[in-house]
Length: 119
Image (cartoon, rainbow, N blue to C red; front, side, top):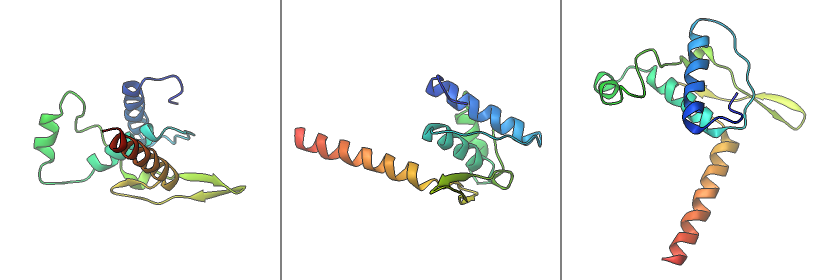
């Protein structure tokens, strides 16, 4: 769904997907966008109750509201790996996608190393 979308519009797409899921409509997407997944994770985090939630929503009212949430129990995530479909872990803190997280960590590590040598 994120194909040819700006990062801002990918965030809006994540909210649209969450809204559809919250209407109890099944949604099936495929993506290679870690950014879309990270925003879905934000919406999962926002579904939790926490002491500063009301304050946080007030401070971020231009980007999020109480409807921008996604219950992790309504989400299933799979990875095609070695010719099989494997379920991935999901919890109240979001979707765990190790291959995204590892590659993001690697690219930041390389960038930090190179910047260190240049400075």
